[in-house]
Every structure is written in C-alpha cells, then in structure tokens.
Image (tube, rainbow, N blue to C red; front, side, top):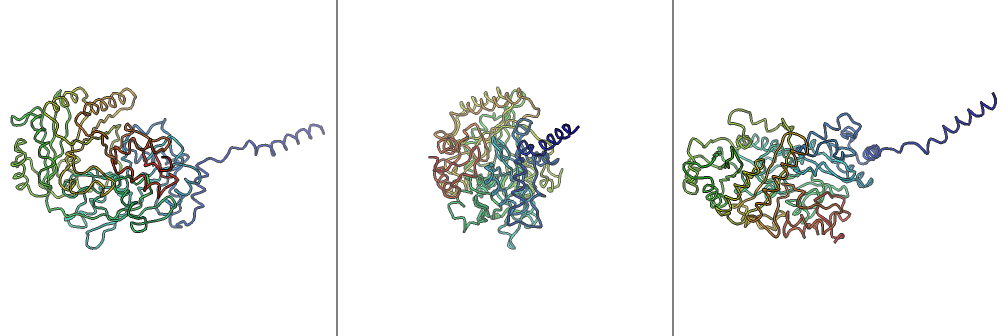
Length: 531
C-alpha cells in the first residue's frame, strides 16, 4: 500500500512538473492582440480590443467578407489574416503597425475592398488586415471649396455629402462605383466621367494625413513633397497608411445630361465598325465637358456597342456638339436625360431614373457578390477598320469578356506625366478595361473565363501601348508580375507598366520613407537596398 502511494505520488509530481515543456505555445493572434492592447498611447474611449477580430471571433468571417469584392479570393483555401483591426482611432493604426513589425507580420490595408486581385486582404504569409471602414468622416470647410475625407469613406458617401452640402453645386471627379473606398481609389489615380474636365481624383487632392512606418502622424508639410507626390498615383500602401485626404471640390452645373445608346449590328444604317472608328476620332478631342464611354460586348452572336455619356450642361448644347462631332451616332433629344449631377451617379449604375433615391449610394454591402477578372491597356493610335473587325471576331469567340474604352484628352493632356506618380497622360487616346464576371464557383467556370480574358488581351497586343505595355494600378492585375521577394528586379517588371518613368522616383521615395520595407505586398514598390 505504501509503495502504491509513493508510486501515485511520483505520477502526480510528474504530471504537475513536466507539462510546462509540453504546453501549447501561445497563439500568434493572442500575442498580437496582447501587443496592441498594451500599446501606448491609447484612447480609452476606443479600446482597441473592441475593434479587433481574430479567427476565434464568431464575427471574424463576416467582417472579412463584408469588404471582399471578388469571390475568387474568399474560400476555404485562401490564407486568412491572423487578425482584422477595424480601426476607429489613429492609435489603432499606430498599434497595428508597431505590433505587426514586432511580430514580423505583413500588413494589408483595406478601405473599400475593391482591389480586383484581392491584395488588400490576401497574402501568402502570415498577415493582419487593417480595415478602415470605421474611419469614414467627411468634414467640409465653410466655403465648400474643400473637404477632409477619411480613407474609409466611400465615394457614395462623399458624393452624397458634397451634393447635399452644396445644394447640388459641387461635385468631385472620381470613380463611378459608389462603394469604392477613398483610401485606395484616390491613391491609385481614381478616375471617372469628369476626368476630361477636371482630371483624376489625385489632381484634386491638396493635402493628406498619414501614419508612417514609425507610427508618426504626418501631413503634407511634415511628410515632404516627394512622399506627397508618391501618394498621388503611386499606391499609398507601399509607403504608409493614409488616414485622410483633403480634396478640392469642383463646380457642377444645376443639371447634367446623360445618355446611353446601344447598337447591335448597326444604327441608322451605320454599322458598328464605322461608329467605333468615328468614336476613336472624336472621343478624346471633343468638348471637355463631354465624356463618352464605349463598351463592347456580344449579344446573340453579334457585337454590341454601348455609347454611354455624360455632359456637364443641358441637352440643347450637348446635341449641338454631337451633331457636329459625332453625327453618325444620330443621338436625338428623346435619348438625352437631364438630371442633377448626384442623380447621374445612379444612371451610371444602370438604375433607371426615378426608380431609387440617391441615398442608395450610401449602401456599403452589395446585394450580390461575383467572381471576376479585370485587366487594362492604353491605346495611343487609332485602331483601323481591319483591326476592329479582327477584335470583334475575337470578342465573338470569347463571349464572357467585355471591353470598356474610356476616353482621355481634355484636362488629362494638360497635366505633365511627372506632376504626380500617375504617368498615363498626354499621348493616350483611351484606356481599356477588360472584364469577365461569373456567378458560380468551380475551377472549370473560372478557368474558362480567365482563359477567355487572356485570349482577348493577347489579341489586343498589336493595337495597344508597348515597351512597356502600360497598365492602370487601380485595375490590379497580378498577371503582369509579382514580387515574392520584394526585390528591385521583380518590382521593376510590373512597376514600369504601372508607373513608366516615374517608377525610379517611386523607388527612391520608398527607400527614404520605408527603408526596412515594412509596407510591402505582392505588387509594392521595392527599396533600393535590394538593387
């Protein structure tokens, strides 16, 4: 009995003394959360733990999915972040940067989630997502010439606020999708249907507040002009976290005029090829107040051309311009709709006039999510009739792909390519967006849509820019190159396509402000030390 007691005692001692060597190590997410909770300074009104979601949190997947705009990157195989910090205070940003650096975690910054290839919420290594959707304030200055907008504000919130504050006399030149977040959209060179009149979003930004890799809060004067230059078109996520932008509001008339003319085969005896030839001749040279986007798709084994336009003025003046510059389209008075600028935002979403209040642009979560692929190109010389017929043939063979041709010219030709980091200015007639959408999961459907997109893209190579074949940063496309090791050589492959000759200056700015390359992702600007 005594020996049994001793034996039992030995076992008890063993189990109480040994397990420490077998104890489960603390989880990375717990270490990170503890680090951010301990960070000082903090704001007692906004405890960071109330805005941190780890994989153990029942709300984690909902928060992650709320701002995923491409279902290709939301599945069981994609690596999920260690944590999502839905920052509600600048100290949350500082804590996230500090703790991610300390634990060698990569940082992904998401303002609206519209990165087409998911780089604002994806990584191949352990990472955290800094989600900006809570930082969405919009503060107007008394004269309504400028406003401070936080990165998490959507374009819909900005447009709605600007229109209501100014009694429909002000607007802002940025994208046509209300759900876009100001943080990423602006910094990539966001454009919209007022670009020919007022340029890009970045051409109307006059200040910014950022948090750098050292956790410092800086504005234009304290960050330096070279960094402020880089943030406008160079993609801020390579350099810092943008907290807010100071934007310059632009005047808009009491009414604008919109139209959408769709043609299949021909219109008024003029075939689609001739209409596209004429569009190429005038789209970048017509009145700066007029923007006409051409969309090419297929319908019943025929190419469909859609000419969707907005004119900053009334229909009488618009018809004068169209009858002079583009009579072949045969635009008539009944196809012209006059409305307030803020109402035109809904028209460009294909919402029929009068069927929904403008407040619908405040909706942040889309009614349905899709699988998608996007690519981009720039065209600098007119495409011949023979070339257009060849393109139409390829479209008919790849019916899942549409192309949107967006005209340049106007103000875009007046701004030097070195004025901001966005280089695609004079010399470009129009920019192309290639788009494929699909609605069901599965590799077979995805591969077919991706293959079709690639085939159309390759067929366009004789007609677009080359050496380099230019690309638009906001139409994120991992096909043009990625930098897994953050080397200069890897970065240059995609860097010169996105930024042309501005790439080298961006590398120098990056090397100065973030020499340790903390702000990096699959298509970030590399540092010189890797050269």
